[in-house]
Each structure stands twice: as structure tokens, then as C-alpha cells.
Length: 194
Image 1 (cartoon, rainbow, N blue to C red):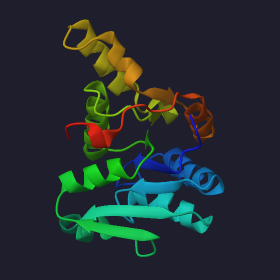
Image 2 (cartoon, helix red, strand yellow):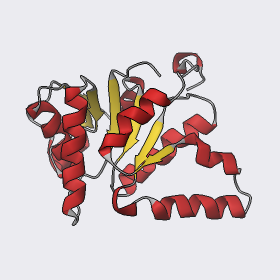
Image 3 (cartoon, one colour):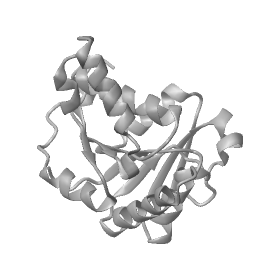
């Protein structure tokens, strides 16, 4: 795949109780800024979201936050972003994050992160896009999610190829080499039905 210019990161609006997750968000921000990859994310200044955004900017990188007005108070929009877009609702937020991103990276998070991840995987399964999706499985955080998918496959509610819709890595250092090794996306989302 050619060098990506923007990476959408889905992650927690809380920092969690494992210091390693905070360190990996910081490290991922450093890697993105060093490689001139713009961060596209949910706009918050809290949790892992705030950590990765601050890390990108502290290292001279670009950050585009997209946040619904109703979350601006609870997630507290990051005050120093390169660009902040305030939208009306979650659907607009997710769509704009999708539109502005060349690929998707999933860090640890809660049900909001899970919602965004499942949606972007579902859109790929429906052939609405073929952008890369990567789960950063530090501390085996996403193992239960993958086990759930295997259970769904076992009960024949989906095909085993569902597991091929995304890739899994264990450290931030693996993300960019994996992206570079993946084929170029062929589907133009502008020509799909959504």
C-alpha cells in the first residue's frame, strides 16, 4: 500500500487501569507524527483519546478531531487541535471520521470503540470500502472480541472470512510496516451506496 496520509484511531475516552495502554497511545502518536500521518479521531481531551492526540501534536504532527456538540462537554474537546469539527450527532461523526481516513487503528476502549470497530468492519464486509483495519492487541485486550467472532462463525451466523476483514498486531511498531505491506484499496467509497 502507498504511504497513508491519515489514520483514524478508535480508542477509549478513559485511560483504563493499565499503564501500558497509556504508553502505547503515546508511542503511537509519536510514530504517526514522525511519519507525517494525520490523526483522525473523536476530538476528546480525555482518556486514551487525549493521550494520543497530545502525543501527535507534541511531536509536531497534525490532528483532526471530530466531535458531536452533545459530547463536547463530557469528552471535553481538545483545546489545541490542528482542526476541530463539531457535528450534530454520532452518525455524522463516524461518517466524517471514515471519509477523512486512509485506514483504521483500534486501541483499547469501551463500547463506543467497539461500536465504531464493528461498524467499520461491517461496512468492509458489505464491500462499501476496503480500507485497512488494524486491531492493536496489546496485553491481549482484543482476544475476547476475536473469540466472540469465532463463536459466531462456529454457529454459522457469519463465515470464517470475517476474520480476514481486519488485521491484528501486538505493538505500535508493527502498525506502519503492516499497512505498507497491504494491497492498495480498490473500492471508492464515494461510489458505494452509503
